Image (cartoon, rainbow, N blue to C red; front, side, top):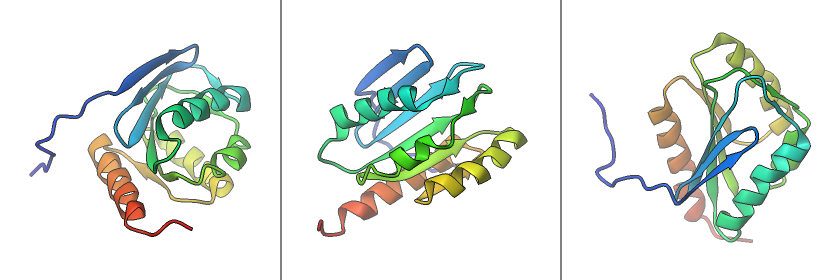
Length: 139
C-alpha cells in the first residue's frame, strides 16, 4: 500500500547548473547531478547559495538523487553541516557503491543524514525531520 499526500507537489524553482539540476520545493531541495561530475567545494557553494535564496529564514531538507555516477569531495560536508537550518540530508540510490560512499560521507557530515532506495521514503523522512524541527523553539 502506498501513502502519498493529496496535496500536489509544486516546484518553486528549478536551477540548471553546469553539473546538473536542483529543484526547490516549499521546504526541501532535490538535486540530480550529471554523469561523471565531481562535486567540489566551489560547486557546493552554488547549491548553498540556492538554499540561502529560498530558505534563508526557514528550516529545510535536501535530497540527493543519485541516478548517475559522480564523485563528491567529502570535505564539502564540513561547510554543509554549518547550515543550521538544514535539518535533513537524504541520499537516494539503488546502487551498492553509493551505499558504501554514503557511509564515508556520513563520517564527514555528522548530522541527520540517511540513505534510501526509494525517493518516496526519503521525502517522507525529510518532511518529518523538517516539520519536527519547526516545533522546537529557536535559540
